[in-house]
Image 1 (cartoon, rainbow, N blue to C red):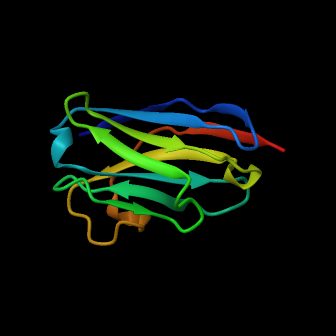
Image 2: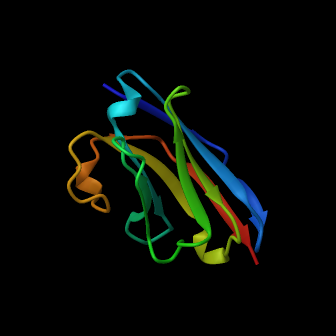
Image 3: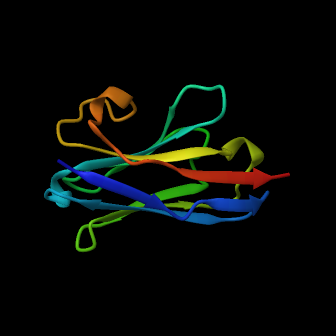
Length: 124
């Protein structure tokens, strides 16, 4: 079993920055692919970014490419999402997810472990 705890959300103005953290415990973190998803009110949960365990290769949704950066620190069992140039449409609950046998990194069903989410609100 893996436990994931997100932190770092909050209220920020348009153009501002936030860094989300996801602390993992319970199993060998370094062998997990990690991802961030988000869900805005009334919308489906959508893929934001992912990072592979093998070579730390990264993936981004087109909507955040160039503004968000995902990274991981295996020594601290933590994955980060640095979010810059935030826009009101980035407002959502952000979820951390983990999985070991990931074929399609953008698919929610590839990740059996999820955190409780952290709210990010970007004011205009």
